[in-house]
Image 1 (cartoon, rainbow over the protein chains, first blue to last red):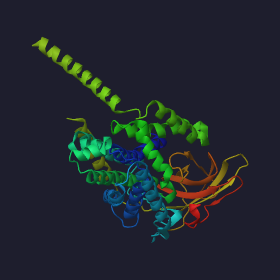
Image 2: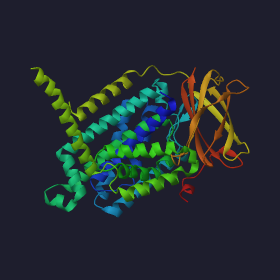
Image 3: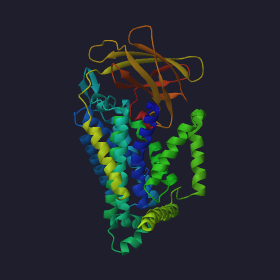
Image 4: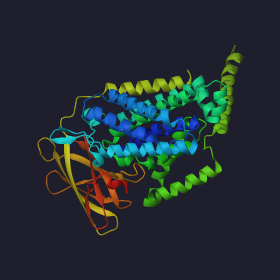
Length: 313
Length: 144
């Protein structure tokens, strides 16, 4: 496979974690403009773990997820009492605070005559784990999609579980959920923690994919995109945000001829899409229709498989 | 087997393959100096790259250098498709013409393969008439 294609697919995979993170909060009815902060925390934590402490990638990704989750829970406890616009602004303010803290964060040690580690606004380069351990681009791509498949499997289990029903119930009507005996605050903090962990894993993968991170990468633009993925792709299934990422990065790559105007064109496309499909492309109705069609096809296949066996016997 | 189980199986297999095949640490770390200058054509810049071994300072010759670029403020949104740099006259030097989408700070990404496999990222500020290192900003200046 072409290295460029591997690069694009890797980017799509890594950003999908951020999209899934924002999607989980959207399920509980909260719009977060701050998921990029947990992505950043995961990126720095995992990068420091491999580049400075010599940890394995697996341990570093777990560490990235844990720091992302811990930060999300810490922020979640006070902010999830807020609703709607107030919550959105609080998450945005938190994300900017994290970005500014990374601009001040310096922690470097000399490696091979070069100082390595986060250096404020100058960023954090030389996160060379995949090169030091001879992990090829295709291998890393497989790792990204393996972890993404694990996250998606988790979402599929979640959506069929009682917890998933509770999340959607809170998202539909928080007061009604509370009247049915649901501990709304506890479940929202839990959702925030899981979302933080997912973003943290994504951040850890991103740092090792690019080998370089700096605070500017994690600004509000990334937060807006992460939220847009769910809204474009649809809120009916966890595959919705992934479709959103595919459209975003796919469209941006395919309209490369427009160079600097690509973002303006993309913004216009998103606006048009949201006018005609306010709950995204894969909304609950479409997901239901696809499920019904799939069951019908499956029944037909089973029936046709049984018929020759019956006529033969 | 449900779809979720299939996904779990796929993820377990791929993760196992990736982690199991991590080989011994690569010994050579690359160091790069990148200097660029405007060509006179809008948003096109000629860049010279000098590659050495970080530890010894020995020039890196037999390597393939793919050069790409990303805008740190808009990751994955504005980027330059990687292109192969040509070997320069001096040992360990390479040349490439970058065609950017706009002026501003760009993270120039050098992907090395061959004798050495490594990636070096250099952040430079590209303006219409000159290219230089990103000015060291105090965090407070960045707010405005």
